[in-house]
Structures are given as C-alpha cells and as structure tokens.
Amino acid sequence: MLFKLPAAWLSGVRLSLINDSRCEVKVKFKWINQNPYRSMFWAVQGMAAELTTGMLLTKCIQDSNANISMLLVGNKSNFHKKAVGKITFTCEEGENAKKLINLTIQNITSKAWFKAKGYDETGDLVSEFDFEWSCKKRNNG
Image (cartoon, rainbow, N blue to C red):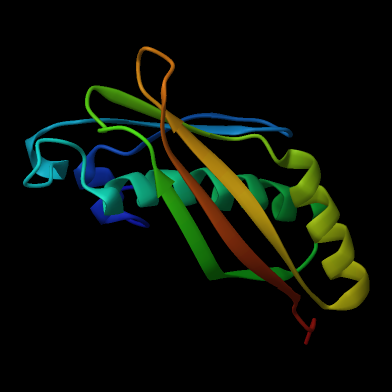
C-alpha cells in the first residue's frame, strides 16, 4: 500500500480484513490526519472507505481471471459523529461485487454502488460513504 497509495499509508489507513463477502480497513485519529476541529479529516475517512469498496471489487476481479478495468465515477457521504480514536470502515457487499463482475463479463461495461460504513471504538456510526464503480471488460489484444 505504501507505493500504490502513499497518502493513505501516511494517514494511517490500514487494510485489516478481506474475504469474499467483506472488506475492513482501520485508521486511527492522530496529528497527521486531523482537521482544525479536533477530529479526523473527512478526506482520510473517504480514503479508508473507498479502499474497502475498491479492494472488495479488486478481489472479485482477480478471482474471476477476467481482464477488467475499474474506475470510481461517483460518491456520496454522510457524517454522523466526530471521528476520534480508531475508526473501522467496512464494506459488506461481496455479492454486489460478484454480480457487477459477472455483468461486466457479459455486457462489457457495468456500474454499481457500494456502501462503506465507519464505526468508532464504541460501535457508533461515524460516517457512511457510497461509491459508484464502473467496470469495463478490456479487449484481449
């Protein structure tokens, strides 16, 4: 991650779990990722949230052995509470990712929305992000 996503690495974003159904990323509030209001900068939360959805989709693409490119084309977010302490972002849309890849293999280009939720150490919802991913089948040639 250091070489592919250096800003995320420096901000403390770390992949903690990935399987066929979910992805989990953690980030701890600290000086380097703070905003002027003594909480985690929204963009750091966004990086962590995007990583959960993107890695889940990347895993499905790799598992399919298909030549597919992916591109983030939209996002929405909501913030519910100050992000302090350790925030855990999860995306539990493995089935949605598999459907998107299967559609892409059949239809060449497809899009789908994926939700990532961030929770603090007490289990309270801090923020929610929705990312729209577009996948396109590449020509083999």
